[in-house]
Length: 248
Image 1 (cartoon, one colour):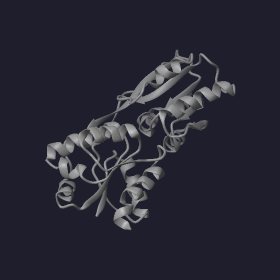
Image 2 (cartoon, rainbow, N blue to C red; image 1 turned 90 degrees about the vertical axis):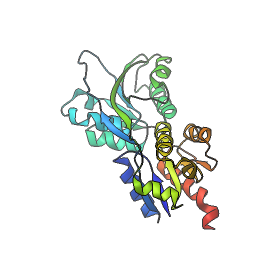
Image 3 (cartoon, one colour; image 1 turned 45 degrees about the horizontal axis):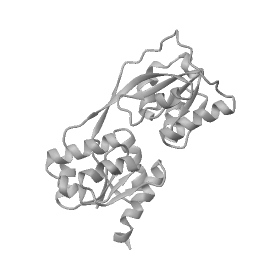
Image 4 (cartoon, rainbow, N blue to C red; image 1 turned 180 degrees about the vertical axis):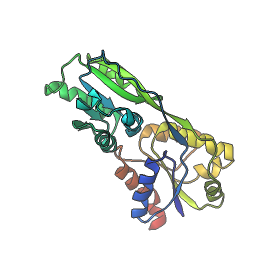
């Protein structure tokens, strides 16, 4: 019996390694493909800091950041994985939030209170093409000027690997991990296209957030477990909770 990981490459490989370390068998079926978008740094803009809500946003621009003035700025990262990607790209001053966009917003606001940032500063937001919340507007409501630069998009992948379809049909997959609402919806589209939606949704769906769970619930999933916090270790703990009756 295997755990299905639907997140894009290369993050899927990291997740698979973590699951195998916990003794699980793993199947990979990325349902979204990472596509960088051309990035241009406007030299006329005076940024006070950079904000990033995904590691992919940093990876997309990393090849263009050598000797960039942006590397000297403080970068606010949504979580540890994004912070690691920022460090690899050359950012030396990285502040890490608690794992979601709301915590990142609060982290920026706390920096105003601690006088690390000035209210009214201009922030560069490196973002994906599809955003689950309007972080720029939320910070704008607190007086910041946020310049959003789209650095990547996640394109749906049509269908699922044959091994995964057979795994659903033969009841060889015991749970699915979901890391974003967009990938959850792409997963639903792929299972419908392959004709395995009913069997795919009959098993535990482990979600990083309640928003992700809501999208799956609306599609008919009944066995939903949500991570206690928006990080991978909490998601792995949710997986163990979802499977505990079977393991007892």
